[in-house]
Image (tube, rainbow, N blue to C red; front, side, top):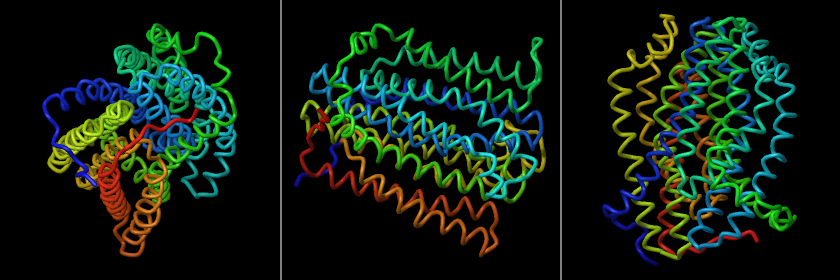
Length: 452
């Protein structure tokens, strides 16, 4: 066995950051679309803010599985590019677009009974009809959203980031205009309140898919020029699903643990739910940076695996982990020092503001664990290791984190803060175990995966 990590040199950091920085811009841009939705709706009322938060959580609880499953593009395309196997890249792209359509259908069906489910979960009566209406209006955007993920992940693996960055910038401007027009009734449009935000989201998701296809047509056109029957053959399709489903489950386990916390917050009232949404949006915004580093890590590690460059794999993994941990250490200090100022950007409601400011320092504590967790997941995805991280997420978030949250919040009387501290514990466990798994994997030779 060899040592699992290699000290990265300047060239390793440059290569990682050259890809990570535009990926981070894209991730932050995608996050800003949601942040703008929340900020615009937050000016309507606390109830509207809580309802949109509940609707968004409901959609993402189901959609996160599909989004995660389609991230199978990362190891398959990046490793194929490292091995200079252009045929595998073409087949993977076509196959994953087909998978996107297959995944969208059950996702839509599962979201149709959202209103009775929210009532069963005893969410606030005043928010449930609005939240359900928000979900129904988001459904037409799911298929283009999945298609956009396939496009984006493929272009990232190719390190063709400019079309994605341009698309995201235009999408943010488009989304802001739609929010102002449809939520508050600007420029002659009817004021639809929180439901207008849902229409803005659906239109923007569709635009992302169409506009990115236009700007990236030179890179993507050769991948769809002619249908490759092998891309739709059952055996490799099933193998691709087998590799991707654990990623989907992993993402969903993480997101649904956050959703459970949100639902428990919703049961404490609209003000508590709104405050939680403000604080979690702040944490999610900074989380976009290590998420971008994670995507870059999957590509850089995957390419090194495809080239059979074992030392390159270890250096890429080390550079990614250092970048992610370093940034999140800085944002942790920011959350601890300026909770009131950060929360005030989201809402003028003094009650919501006070509670959100009390949650923000806790978010500061889990920043470093959050960064290490997501970057580690990217490294393992680049290696083609998907089953192990799924099991680790199950253990850390559901068998440890959620029970600790319930214990602290309801049995020890810590309320909303207790729910968040339990989440911190779950993150710490997952991050530690993923780092250990990386060390074990990289202490041995790694090989390319293939589904053909």
